[in-house]
Length: 451
Picture 1 (tube, one colour):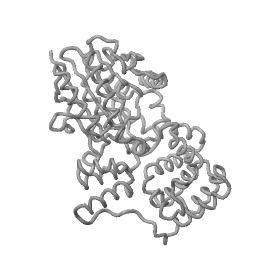
Picture 2 (tube, helix red, strand yellow):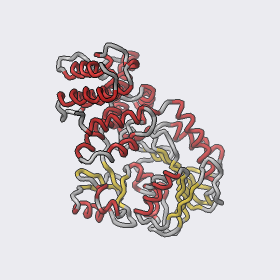
Picture 3 (cartoon, helix red, strand yellow):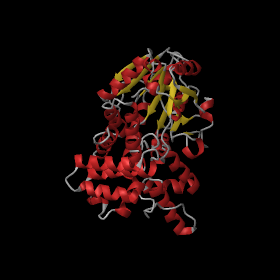
Picture 4 (cartoon, one colour):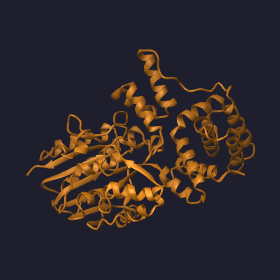
């Protein structure tokens, strides 16, 4: 009988690879059917790991399979990917248990005979004498070294070759390798203390009483890094004292520099973490309009705002693809733009296989239009903050440069928040880099409308 965790992990992989949902959504659904916390943890580890290491896994499978992987049934291929991840990247699972469950699961999802194919491949790869291997780091110079470097980044470190090539050209081999290795580590659980409800120290103390150990983050003033425990099941989470948010995302909130009594617009606000952070900076005083379009995203945003008691927030459903229904009245406008998400491959490993270079150009076009529409709502002397969770220039500095050319009445200003200052580049744009900062890749620019 197949273990519930492995069956759930396979369901997640099929959901992601057929495009029915992203990894986070698929995992949430699958974990809901698992009563045991250990099964939920194992299912998440297998599904995320098989996606994170997919290129390396497929390379190993290609060396022992008797047919091209493109001719292998898709459901069987996902059984194999999960099995190879366990055998080669998850040391704590006995090989015999992995192979047994993979064969059992194959009998459930594929035609007769596929189980023998799966059994043979996984047994070969579990044998210490198996010659299947991954490319090594480059040791030579010139064109040969570049080809070896790209093989190492794209196959051994399992990143899309086109993205590896970009990082290699922009940052050099050492930093590109460090970035890829950063992405391949499971993301830690990062929390934001909701200052409308508790200071970071108070939140940490309350979590400790529930068996959750969380230490202050390195950079963001409200950040907590969880080392043990499950904060999502605590009264502190239910009561809105904390919310889950990446530390780099928390630093983006510092760029807004909102204050009590201000009028603030958060254009693409769901799921609401940055909205709550801005409300905390406002000390709950003033008006914060939080907007999104899709009913499902609005429902998530509303739940976050209600749980965190952000009473200064007013929710609005609007289509940011059209002119916004506001006069230029806002002191601050935050555009946390829809983007590729390529800066968050550590927490969302499935993104690396979904985004293509062509997608960047399409997103940049939408980002140009969104930023221009948001600018029309900024008062004279007010500020417009543009942010993405991407490290790619097309979505970041290129968008800002085009905006400034078309809107000369806006200028880039240097944010005063000390927690953001260390991440500013020569153009006064905010940028976190995994290989330098140990944070996921986020970008931000603060644009002030001239009086």
